[in-house]
Image (cartoon, rainbow, N blue to C red):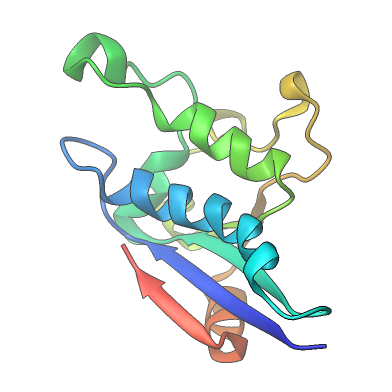
Amino acid sequence: MAIKKMAFIVNKLPYKSETSRLALTHAIASQTVEIHLDDGDNVEPVIAFIGDGVLNCLKHQKADEAYGVSTLESHIKNALLTDIKLLICEEDVKKFGLTEAQIIMDAEDIGADVTSELVPFSQIMSEMESADHILFF
């Protein structure tokens, strides 16, 4: 049984770019590749938001009103619904003066059991060190 661990690292702002959305889309899509893998093989994605990227995780963004596109809130919730590990750098959350109440921590409203985790950057580095592939967005 071979598991390929993929770390999707998001450090870009959520505005006027598809970068963050692509990271989430690729991570969610990685869950469907098992039909192309040998029996027992699998992909284990982890998404980490660092630096300016933590601003992607704010609740109640108004991207639809401002830019005419859907917000990342539903994308993040879909990632949690598909049981993807989602890490948010706690040092960067503090740097921006944000609280856990302002961050998308769960997707209970759509039935997700997995929650986001506020973690130190050192834990995100550990995830990157153990990953077979690291993708920066």
